[in-house]
Length: 399
Image 1: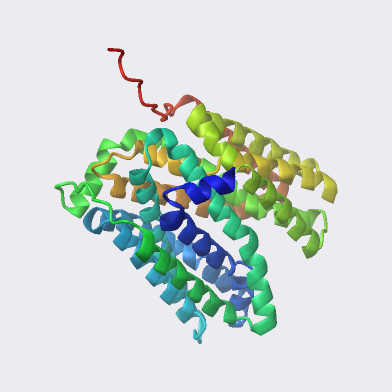
Image 2: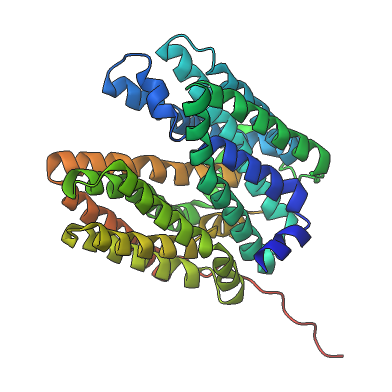
């Protein structure tokens, strides 16, 4: 059923195919980048900075992406994002110093921000509200499928042909995604506000301040939980349980497999019952799993919790993008989504920092409890402070 819906969707070639290729290509670098960074013979601090370069680019690019969307439209910005990402990635093959590589990573992050915000705007424009949850959940599932196999391919290529060769392969994959966007994505008419770029941004912030303070804060906690979980599980497995890298990889595979399994049901729940019915249970169960991690003492116990959290996270696939699309005003949609994406990226960047800070001050187990508390806050905000955003079309009046 999932494959049939993907193939039959009008977004199959224009959005899902290039997104699958893009996700696969970017995730190929996940196992490569730490080793690549260490090849420059720099400190762990500088290695961490290089690894964070793409996230820094996200934060720098989100707001400009929204402004550019209002001026040029989604297809043009998406193309610019893929081209910039291709250049930034391939250039890493020739980088001769850490500062040079850092520059290319930030460029890649800014370009990915352009691509992310543009495709979010395209999804918001191309799909009606009552089908939006399924369409965005399918997109989230496609992205997860790409990430499921990409790291293995990247590690194999690096081991067989050299540490820098994956950058060239990723560049070629991005080129294929670029061709798909140019060939199949329509140029949608953009509703442009009469304000200048910065006046329009101020207007978006002013008119939507309640949504940014409530749903936006909820999204920060959501992304904190997701990013924090990805940091805590391997650290706890290695430092507390003493598991080797193969078992840690197996844990991550279990989590990813169950996460992918749930993306389609997530879309059905969002469109059939409401966005909250997917978000609130998801983060209640993720919080429970995080809170129980300090009690585990074996691979099996941790695997059960990781599987539960992967399953729960899959239930929230696409929820934050869907909420953002529902809340975005049509006239200033691009700028709204740029701000919305920035808020999410702040949460995603803050999760690992919170884990590291609390673990350094107290213990890794305390970090798990703090992340669990963030999940409770996320569920509570969306349950009690954010109105349900699903709006179904009313049936025609009888004649």
